[in-house]
Length: 338
Image 1 (spheres, one colour):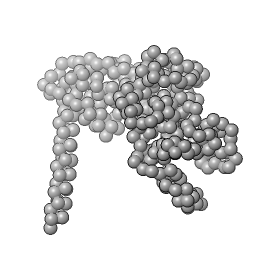
Image 2 (cartoon, one colour):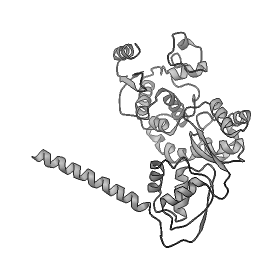
Image 3 (cartoon, rainbow, N blue to C red):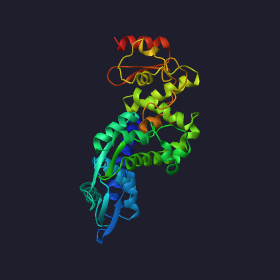
Image 4 (cartoon, rainbow, N blue to C red):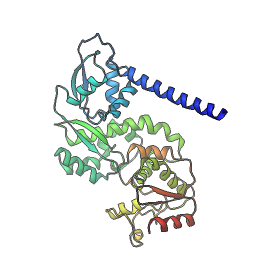
């Protein structure tokens, strides 16, 4: 009887919490002042994220709560559709009305969206950006190979010494002006990375033995090794555990990078390639990141799972089997790679 009562209590608390949260969000999506229709002009800069937009709206007293607005924008799949531009809004508009206005576009009306996906090399990112914008591929590469151009404008670049921007071009969907140049677009990507560095990466660096550059380096490996976001922290911990005991990383992703092509399965000949990126031969991390990782992979390195695994093998469905010993790993490999 006591167990039933305890279970009912847990259920009641869960239901109450759910109702409270829903009510909290609904209340904070209402108009700031339903009776105030005075016009407020706001400028949403090109490259603004949903977080940036929410802050601008809040500072102009157009929304009640930034977190509720961002949550609702994500829930309604509006966050990737928001456009830069000049808008005339008012306090009597609720979240739906404001989102619809931001999706429709401002009075400038000359913006469009570009997407940079996770795990792209500089060459792949330059090609994608060139195809999406019609801008010059070679110019993108030139800018990516010269981080010193941007060094004085972004905090993270003042804290590292890098030869190119691979690893630091933040994957996301961006709204940019039609007349943006190659440099304008690279700056948009770097601005997003810089904000993430200041707000998320830098405060967590004290929790790891890795340097900032090493965090991004390892995150780029995790990005390619883990397909599922929920496994990235475990994959990161496997590599961190290996680094701690001076065990070679033996990452297939780094070998593929050394070869310049992607193979689902490597041969013994593949893993014998003479390259500083071949972590089957070279101890420790490769010289540079092998791509530009996403936020989840970076945070997974900074906040890895609390596990002592040393091995993992792909199960063929996107997930992995993790193990502590080599013998267990070999058994799993024989089962899943059969």
